[in-house]
Image (cartoon, rainbow, N blue to C red; front, side):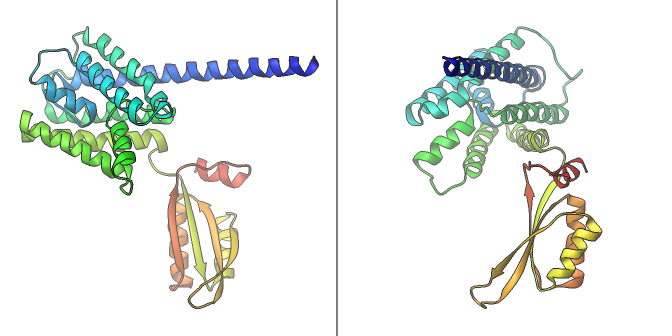
Length: 305
């Protein structure tokens, strides 16, 4: 009996936690949808602009039919939802279902109000702000682990069914390129070029939302014959921890030490300069680390720098 009560209590705690997390997600997604809807209704449409993604497709269709943007967007989202449900199943469908309902609904509400961000028509400024606002939307959505019923879902579908060896980003880039080129036929080349500017800014802004203005953690791997000098420099001068492993080159069968450390972007430059001084023949790789966690002062110092 006691064990059953404990299990019930655990289930209650888990349920409360899950509900709380969903409410936080819902609030953040609502803010994200509102920012994007404001971008479309208050900036993009009044200035006659377009972009990639479902928004671009809807703008092309809207040129030929006199239907509100939000209704057309609902239709486009519904098509994507049906395709994902048929070809990719529930696992992928549940990722896009919430935003497939929420975002067009917010768009519909915003369309009922007549407001514009810019005092007068300025296409370049509008293209920039569209990119910033939409990038905030994309970044917040990805940050919370959700996805929209857009061209990214179509890209996943195409990769699964036809282009197994092509990266998702390349497929998505091709889809957006086709949409923007189609916009050039409908709205003219200048509008398509402004759409390209918007698309680039969307990508960069979403990266800032997800990772900050720069990736604050770098991972450096160093294979050097001057192992001890480099190790001492990292520990004593940089004040960083470093791990090492013994490796062997399969061609030369020579055994060496490999150093691995996490540091800030500024410190990575210092490390590169130092290794160039003491061992020009060293083999060095440097990659950006998107996420790092764990116990220890070293991690905290890097993230805060």
